[in-house]
Amino acid sequence: MVWSDEEPESFFLEDLPESLGGMFPAHPLKRKQFLAGRFLLTQLVPNFPLQQIRIAEGGRPFLEQGSPYFSISHTSKYIAAIVHDQQAVGIDVEQVSDRVLRVGNKFLSMVEQQLIQVVLDNAINLTQTILYTLAWSVKEASFKALHETGVDFMRDLPIENIEWMNGFWRVEMGGKGSELEIHAHNMGPVCLAIAVRKV
Image (cartoon, rainbow, N blue to C red; front, side, top):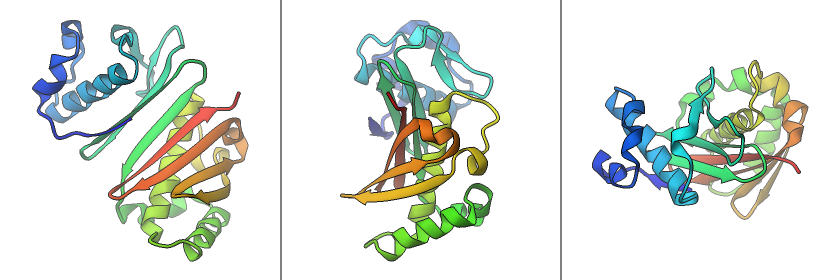
């Protein structure tokens, strides 16, 4: 689920248990992102055990009992969440911005950049900025689904193949990413990627 976060904080508070109050971040933006993310979880799973959410050392929220597996992401005014009963998942939403071009060499190898160029050469209404943002989002979602620390985006999550299907990317990765099924989509001002462990 992807939500355009235009509501006041009070909107999200109406549907969330009061017991979450002691967990709210102090910063207003972080607090609203916290509330909106948990609101989305309850829209996906009405009785989601919000009080049992813990935060891993790297900042990733999780449930100690594992299932349901979930992931939350936010950027600008957009919030995204995904839930899966049986498999680890990751989601990432990113605002399309030229800044991703300036750091492309830090997360994309030359082989990956050439692969993206082939997609760009054969695509309509796509730009290098959109494709690099999609690639970053794919790697972020994959990292979240792996539930590991010390993952290097270039070494451990190399993009090996991209299929463009009806506005969606279907991505195949090597390394640690080979354990995942990955899809991505450009939604105008933002890019969205989801990753789920293969059964």
